[in-house]
Length: 202
Image (tube, rainbow, N blue to C red; front, top):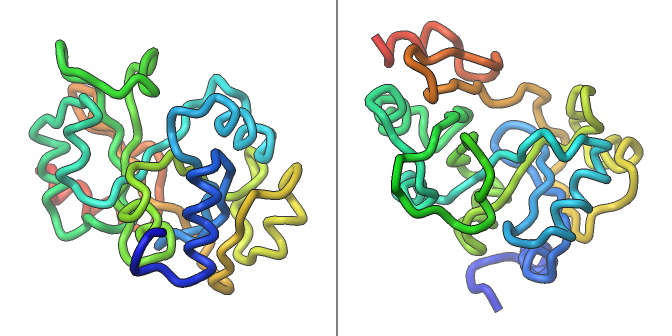
């Protein structure tokens, strides 16, 4: 049993351990999460979203210090963002892999990863309890993420193994900044305004 979690969260943590998909709120939108390392769990998540397996899944971790264990290269631009007041929070950073660095087997074949440390939310509790998770927005592919669990379940192609309902959530995602480039690029507008990102990078 994982200490410090409410019964609904304990059920979600157990579902993750069993290789099932969990629906829970992040600090931005609702997300679908799985523990990495299970091909069956990955297939189930892609099926729920109707998403092509060619589109890689983002990663959430509980602390910034856990990111290095993924084998990524944290360059100066990424370091500025990850050590800012925006993290934990609604900022996702895409990172490449450091040459010669070890990486978990479940990241084999990836050329970069999008990583986020969520702020207080059920999903943050889960990553702190269960370790790094593959997490993507809880929407059918190429649609906006609904604000309620009822709407999400009506849209998905199937049902997750566990659901944590936190009531209506915002529909604005995290801001995505690709730092695996010579000049960082904001690839998705979100809760963090562009000018705030640019000020940190300048």
